[in-house]
Image (cartoon, rainbow, N blue to C red; front, side):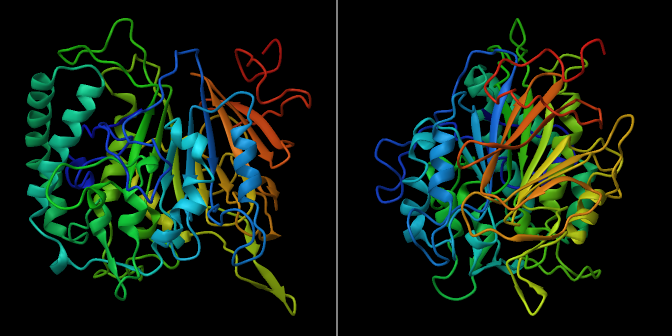
Length: 492
C-alpha cells in the first residue's frame, strides 16, 4: 500500500500538501486513541495470487450497545467482517465514522475497540463524513499560512521521497527524483493558471483546512490523528495530526521499484487504485464550502485537480505494463447517485434521508472532462444498500456494449437505517439492510457481494473490465470460492 504520486503539471496545486496513503513510517498514536500496540506504517503484504480483496462500508460509528438512536447494527457488521473466511486485503470506511459530532472522546469506543482486529492488521482506511466534521468550517484565505507553491513543493517532495523509498529506491535517488518532478510541476503553466484563478484559495489538503465554528466544536484533527486511519503525513512544522491528508489514493499490491527507480523484474503492477476523496469540501448539501455556484463561490480546486491527475495517470504509470491499467475505484462519503431514502415518514411525507447530489455530479463531470472515468464509485451517507447499472455521463443506464460507471451506495455499516422511497431505472438493486460490500478484483473481472450481519448474500454478481454487462453469480457461488478465470458464461 502506498500513496501515489501525481505525474502531470495539472496536479501541482491539486496535491496540495502531499498525497495521502498508508503512513510510511511508524508513529505511536495517542494512548487514549487506539488499542495498545497499534502503530502507523505497517501496510499488509500478501503474496500476489492474481486478485485483490476489498471491503467497503459507511455510516457505522455508533459503537456497541445502545446509543443516541437506539441499538444500531455496527457491532454485528464488524463481527461479520472479522469472521470472513477469505479475509480482505483492505477495508475502506466511507465516512460518518464517529456519530454524532465526531467527538474526539468517542473514537476509542466507536471505532478503535470495534475494529481492533482490522486495525492491528493495518488494513483500515477511511474517508471523512459530514458527521465527522460537525462543528467545522472551512478556513478562510486569511487563515492559511505560507504561499501555495511553498506549501505544495514541501509536501510533494516529502511525500514522494517516502513513497519511492517504500517502493525500493535508495533515499538519495528518491530525493533527487522527487525534487526534479516537483520543480517541474509547481512551475508548470497549469499550476500558474490555477493560482491565478484563486478560487480554491489554497484550501489545505490536511486537517488545517478546517477550523472551529465555535470554540472546541471541530474535531478534524482528531479524525486524522488516528494511526489506523491511514492518511499520509507531510513533513513540516506543527502537530503531526494536522498534517495527515484528507484525500489520498492507495495502490495495491505495492508496485516495486529498483534502487534507481526502474520497475522491478518481474514487474508486479498494482491491480487496483482506490481514490479516496473528502467530499465535504465539494458541491454537496451541507458541505463545508459555499456551494451557491456563483462566480465568486469558493471551490476545492486543488482536490479536483489532484483527482483529475490521479485518473489521467492510471494508464501511463511507468511500472504498469501496456494494457494492464489497474481498476480505478472512487470512494467518498456523499454518494453522487443514490435512490431517494427517508429516515422516517410523517403524514405521508418523506423526512430525513438523502437523494442525489446533482452539484457533485456536475463538479465531477467538469473535473474529469475528456478522461476515462472511474470503473466504480462507492459512497455512503444514505443508510441503505444500492447498486446501479453501468451509467453514462448523464446518469442514464447504458446496458449494451462498453463504458459506463457503476455506483454502489453502502451506508449500512451500523447507523439507523433509512427506508427507500423511490428506486428508479438506474438501480439494479436497492435494499434497506445492515451490510458491507465485498469485492474481489482480478486483472480483467470484478466479483461483488453485499453481505448482511448474518453472512447472507443479499446481492451478488460480476462484470468484465470495460463492459457494462452485469452477470449474476450462481446461488451456491460463495464469496470465498475460487474465482473462475472470467466473468462470462461458458463458451463466451
